[in-house]
Amino acid sequence: MKLFQPLSIRSMTLPNRLVVPAMVTRLSGEDGFVNEDIRNRYLRFAKGGAGLVVLEAMAVHGSKSGPLLRISSDEFMPGLRDLCTDMHTIGPGKVVPQIIHFLKIARSGWRQKVEDLSIADIRTIRDEYAAAAERSVRCGFDGVELHMAHAYTLSSFLSRLNKRRDGYGGTLECRLRLPVEVVQAVRAAVGDQFPIGVRFDGEECIKGGYTLAESQLIAYRLVQSGVDYVSISAGGKFEDAQPRAGEPLYPYTGYSGDRCMPGKTWPDGANRYLPAGIKTFLRKQGVATPVVATGKINTPELAEEILAAGDADLIGMARPLLADPDWPRKVQGGHFDKVIRCCYANVCKARDEHFQTVACFLWPKGSKQAPESDDTVPPQWDRQLTASTAQGRVSLKWSAATDNEEVYGYDIWRAVEGGEFERIDAIPAPVTAYHDTATISGLGYRYFVQAYDLAGNRSERSIVVEATV
Ligand SMILES: Cc1cc2nc3c(=O)[nH]c(=O)nc-3n(C[C@H](O)[C@H](O)[C@H](O)COP(=O)(O)O)c2cc1C
Image (cartoon, rainbow, N blue to C red):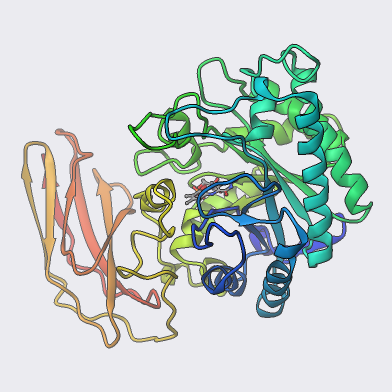
């Protein structure tokens, strides 16, 4: 599989094409130091076998925020260095921190904008990025990723809504000026060999925001400035965030937030056209820089198809690898059938919003980390399943499975009108019921359910039941 072929990016060689994109954990304290919970989270990702693990966004500056890692001064280095060393020891992949600058926001709804920054502020931001990147070298990281996506400072400079009139806003060239200066300052600080990645939005997904037409040019300009890979995200902006009384704006609550972390109702690979369009443009300019695609990519087939089509060089999987950090190892061993599969309930996102430990909806209640087990005995059950219909929905009920360890959850599979079965959702045990509301009359539906345990061992399939609404 192409997915498990190595890829070299300047001085680092990734053992495979799977990336854990940055994902804030809310496991750190407000002090910003690496603690035991953070270590456990990332050692687990490393052990799972991803080719590249991007450590969650960590601040380059000292501004107050909720729980967030920091790399804004040397005092944070020992924890980061130990984490990096241990990740290298326990797993095959490379490790880079994502470094971020964000502007101030208040519970009142006020937020600082790029138009409020003085030239001195802008120079400070550039220098803070360079200093943080240089610390990344000293920590032993394999590279550094600059956060230029979503609602944060450099993304707001890139935005079409950046209305500065002083050479740092307005036209595309001027909107790119600070991001380019940051890349150049970072390159000067880290030297020729150290890989620099950038994460930015392929589309802002807000009214008046930029789209692929400009993000192709942004990618090209950043690469010309010294960037070694581009990781393409989408949306996640303040401009369309939903205000909630007494709470600071969370930039993933509007439409652009849905586009950033597409939930259940979005098709798989929802943002694929963005890395594809950017990669096509870069290649036309004779640029071979690797492109990372992310956004509801969740099966080996889809990942492989994206790579084979040339739509990306690397596959980012955030929520799927949160659900099961062992996804890479299991799939490489030919065992996708043992993967605990994300159901895009976006509970992780909701927890991030409320500064609660980011955990997966499917994990056993109260867990801070994904469960681990090397048990090989699958759950047992009587395979009984019933379907009933009312008011346009299909309700499934099944009898509970049993397991020598613990029944962890159930996958729901559906086939429409004689088509192939697709896994449409997952339900954590002990729930043994499911309502399918995405059905229409005039079509026949068939369902089966499969139980899985902590190791991902699947039970036999339930009987197949048929329904029409
Ligand atoms: C809880 C959570 C935290 C995230 N934190 C970050 C972050 O720190 N930096 C970033 O660039 N993206 C962040 N993201 C976005 C993910 O990296 C990813 O782009 C998004 O979840 C879509 O990919 P997926 O469908 O594979 O989950 C976060 C996503 C989630 C769910």
